[in-house]
Length: 131
Image 1: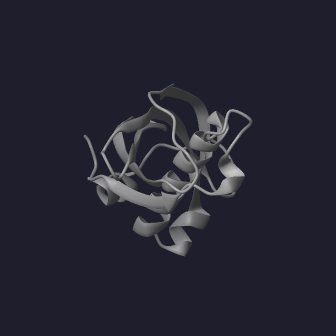
Image 2 (image 1 turned 60 degrees about the vertical axis):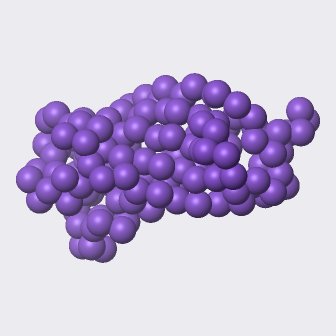
Image 3 (image 1 turned 180 degrees about the vertical axis):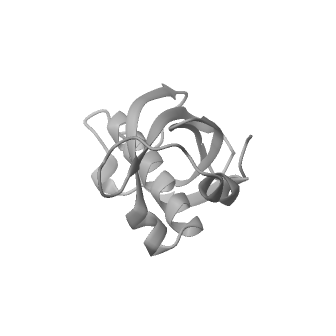
């Protein structure tokens, strides 16, 4: 079950640049997480976001090319699959000017009950939002 691709665009700010004069590696992960949150928010109501929350179990990230201040990037994300309480989300960050892949990544998420913070099975209500 691969969901539709959600796209989040940004311009690389000076604050993302490290001593090597390119985007710091940690910033890419931050942008991935921001895109995931924006995707979740775009598909859910406030009530559903209170009922359920997500936590990260692990990240995998590959750096393919550097990016620099002022470049226009696109963070693409989608839900690749889910099983039980876990969901795998994929990411691809590309430079808009030449479609060069900058980063590929994936995150394994766990769904929690918003009140108890205990793992809870991904419901049909949630899975159909991203189908």
